[in-house]
Image (cartoon, rainbow, N blue to C red; front, side, top):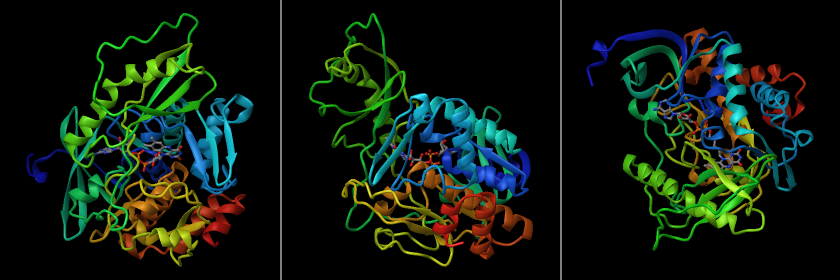
Length: 420
Ligand SMILES: Cc1cc2nc3c(=O)[nH]c(=O)nc-3n(C[C@H](O)[C@H](O)[C@H](O)COP(=O)(O)OP(=O)(O)OC[C@H]3O[C@@H](n4cnc5c(N)ncnc54)[C@H](O)[C@@H]3O)c2cc1C
């Protein structure tokens, strides 16, 4: 790669958000709404990350407050889905109320349209099909992110960066530390993959051209949607090290190779007998990956005790659901600003599933609405830091809370949970 000084400069922004999943969209829209000039860089050609390309069409939470309490951007996403009849029992979308699990399924294909409409309406500039591949950082200050796309390498400068890549890509390029595996619960959840089948009057038996003898028995759970059924495929002990490029690639390949087997198996069930394969998610289902170390590391005990923090800027209450702990209910807890401030960097915030938490704490906080709220907090803080020309750590968390609460002016849940 050429030296960053030789790379063509794409532009200069107030805030550059890396990654356009639920956290990145939350961050970009919140920063733009606060008046910042924002660029969102996304590796794929669509917004939403796992929520769209991963086929995860289900907002969940640990109590029945949804859709309230998750900030204005999430409110707007919900309204957009409802306008397209893509969420809500009235339109045939399942709502689950089994405490402590509350779920609202939605159409993940429509979410991609809604997110783009929202970002464009907020004035966020979008750069799709572009990978963040480096950072030009000196003494903890990131001057530019190095990008790669059809124009080859480019760099983009910004006052503040938000790393919402799910893998801490920008932070790691800039030299930030990552968190080790939890001492007591070192394993990560095995990857999974979403495929979709739909009913067909002339459904024949699924052809399987390649059997996979000796591979672990396929398992899947079934998500019913109005016109199709999602199968969440996984198998135990696949042995994939998805923290490496090769391991991630191998996992994606292994799942795709076995799609015909899964479909044929489902056709053998009462529910699946008239089904044909429709499509599979383009993104591998990875629940946890790299977690970037922040000023504070959120722990499972913080969650269990429903801990309040003076610098709270987001909240959650979904059950712990990790490789080691299954479905342990949590009280409402707060997420402090320190978890979004990347250690050793002065102008980078992290949001979403690579934020600073132990792996077990992340197993609760990784749900989409919480990632989106973290993103909104990071976006609001980034706009403030930019406007006042201060390092991200000097932003007052109380001001971030007030901005979030003021935007959601009819939203008592958010005020209550953030202590505003
Ligand atoms: C199988 C499965 C089931 C789940 N079920 C639920 C559920 O029922 N309900 C729920 O709420 N949550 C669920 N989750 C969790 C949830 O989907 C994710 O934790 C959440 O969507 C993460 O959002 P994010 O924005 O942090 O990350 P992501 O969605 O991973 O978004 C990151 C984005 O960054 C982009 N990116 C990555 N690297 C780069 C780069 N170098 N340059 C530019 N862009 C980059 C990616 O393409 C992606 O769009 C599930 C997850 C899985 C895997």
